[in-house]
Image (cartoon, rainbow, N blue to C red; front, side, top):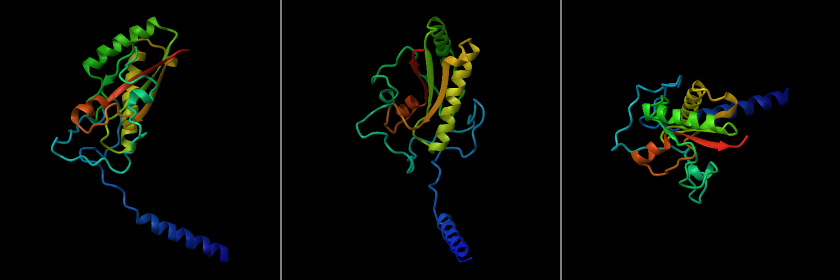
Length: 191
């Protein structure tokens, strides 16, 4: 009976401590609604350029040696590989006309190179929470994968993953840098 009372007391203390933890506020301009479907977030607007962006405590550099997304994905800096990145608008996973044209060329290349597989990495800019950007990155990678499948690329040759905001290709905090980071990146591998 005494052990039971001690356990209940410890649980009560833990619960009280957990209730006192404050979560960081959401980043300005980041919608709080859950994501769904390839066109999720189409009603959002980007924050104004004059607004300061607080990235929150969950943004940490991956390495201190200045690595960029290209380096971390196994490709040398500045080298795109045979399949170019596909870019997205802020807070969107819908494919633009330019993205569709690029993906049509990618499908042709993949058809000609039947011995390769590709991992599609969904990336986001640094605004928003880790969880939100992982979900959005997944939607972007899945949208690209589904489009390539519709063009006849075999499903077992395409893997879609999300890296969210964890590996920006350009770490600057500018609109131009953020536009570079909102992408689906391809890593081509052998059989």
